[in-house]
Image 1 (cartoon, rainbow, N blue to C red):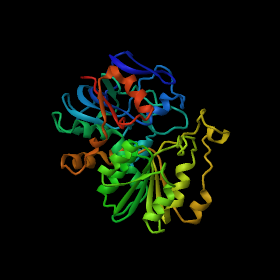
Image 2: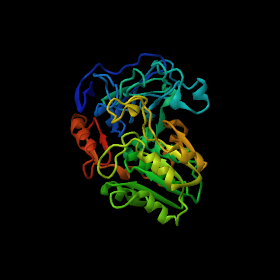
Image 3: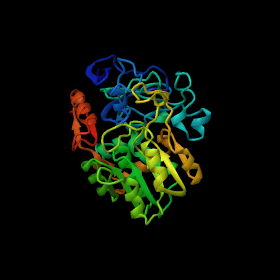
Image 4: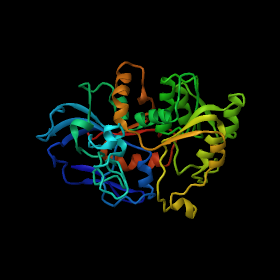
Length: 380
């Protein structure tokens, strides 16, 4: 089958790989209808992780079930499904408590709990930027979708970015009537803004410097904050009459850049500490890593980010972090889409055939105007 294969820094190719197949009784194989390029894929693409050459990329996947193992009873051939990026067993301590993003059984990597498709340190699982995908523990992991092709570009957000954005607001402790600030207007930040509005925020401020992404934030009902024009903290504090936002979401991660393009991994954390009110909450869903060989200083290379913890403590702020347990949210978000309440596909800018994946990665990685979310469709 054809698949997107990582070969080195900024070097990927669509090439032939062994076909996905049922390997365990609880497996399913799905034919991919849509698979997305994620912002976190760019960390690998840029050589900022230890992902191995030859890895098939892609953790945002949906499609049609073509084969099931003899132990699969709930999922059937022909089902249209969304595959959460988390690969979870469903029965370990973390899974039974709803933390499928930290499954204790599916990742043999020492010191890492939680597995995913096609990602560095997240287990030996091929990704879904391919014609087919093997799904372990299919009965537990797969979310059934209505048959047909309605809402295809909305449903494809259910595997990662929409639940991750929602998780950011959950970690931040958002309540109805809150003012929420979201740093980062990439796909996850935009989904956090959409989620905050759906959850009843009074106002949502979205901080970025890309006009195309800020315009999308406005379409979700958020207030765009352009940090290239003025200090974002000052803009948020002025808009809230000096009180600050009630909570905030970090949707940027360790490769945060200032308005001059220089990288500062602590930048967004510091800004959130400054512009979220005392006793407020922070939800950190931007990616941070234990090792970053491309970091600018020795501490950051070891995952040590020097941020303003003293003020964080003094203000009595709270913080939640980590990858989203997609299954905790995806059914409800699916139903919001079907009801017409949620429209995550607004962020989609490009739909490309699989063989144009390298083209999509290049433009998305360059943050070129208008390249806000790239979907790969093997059937095109």
